Length: 480
Ligand code: NAD
Ligand code: UDX
Image (cartoon, rainbow, N blue to C red; front, side, top):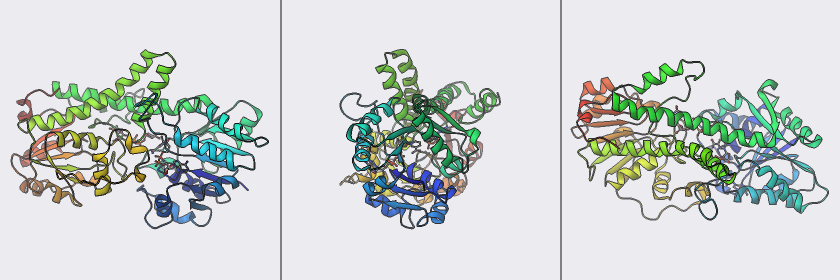
């Protein structure tokens, strides 16, 4: 009987293993984590992450062939296949700080696997790691134990948050990389058999280890690059009177370009894009490829520029100061349908506005006040070390209030910043909103969700990323 253990019950480990358990009823799947509160939540009615469809999947298999436990060593020892899905954040200190991946969590998991194993195991890299990590992990695994065979595979995860269950049910592809040795190929087949329960075999791609590891970094870099490209265009649209939605549609109909991932925004966020590109940049630099490193660095620079540009637009439109003004922030998560705030552009935008002494009233349907307070107090890159283990900042920021209703956030505000594209922000009663705001009433739409013309008819001064500017905004000083 195949027994799977997954180390790391996070955004990837939890949903991925739940879907494997659902699709492979004869396989026992145990997800383990050192964080007891996370495991307790997985065993409760309030799962630790919000993901559409996840509750259903977990309810169907939990207690049957899906288990969540803090008894890490026991379940690792019993498994034939061990997935490692721990966090691999950006290093904050020492060599490569601010760029390189911090493999502390991965290394400690590998050492523990080596220590507790009494039988042969396939060890699967599920976390996103620098290319060649498998080689280092192999050394750790084989160093401590004689007579036990560990075969390492790379099986990066491509799910996106908010659509994780749909992505896992019907992936574009599953990628499995392994050594080109008989043991490596045997392990690839064993893992392919697991996925083949529901993924058509022609969508299961098998490569060598390094191609699989690098493909994950490359995929995220390409996706993020598309967003930075369209965001760079959005700045030019605002300067020229072109409309970025029309430009996106026009170029997206070219089948070589395609329509997806061309939505201009206040900037991309999430736990992966920035971290993985920085990691790629570091690897290029270490391999003596500074030109390649600089090319990818630019994707991050444009993303940072887009967030700064948004803040500058808000401040310059409101008579060059937001000091003491109430700004309603609608949406804090890095995208809709998730409560995840890791690297959300909302953090940088809120910090920028707070730097100009604004008073913020923040509403997000899935993000708690504790989380927002913690995020706004945290230093760059500290969020993933891991966020749920970090203490709450003792002093809460008096410039910030967090409320549980959009209208409450908006009441008496001078301006609204839409920072996440939650559907409910499209359907607010904007006449009612206008009536309860200070005048002139501003809307800064960082996600292109509002009907600009309709809002202008009501009386709002509207800024929407990459759209032709309101005459009011045209008269304001240029935004750098
Ligand atoms: P996460 O922080 O949500 O979960 C990681 C979990 O690992 C945490 O709960 C932590 O407590 C646990 N952990 C750390 N060290 C451990 C140890 N030694 N033993 C047991 N548990 C340990 O992270 P995530 O978002 O699930 O990401 C995991 C990996 O997957 C990262 O490498 C990430 O880059 C990659 N990834 C993430 C996504 C995504 O959408 N979040 C998508 C694809 C790939
Ligand atoms: C990403 C990758 O898509 C996924 O394959 C990988 O496994 C993990 O990283 P995720 O970060 O969960 O997934 O969400 P994604 O949908 O990629 O969005 C990332 C950010 O880009 C969000 O802030 C989103 O709002 C933004 N975005 C996305 C845009 O600004 N415009 C777009 O057109 C698409």
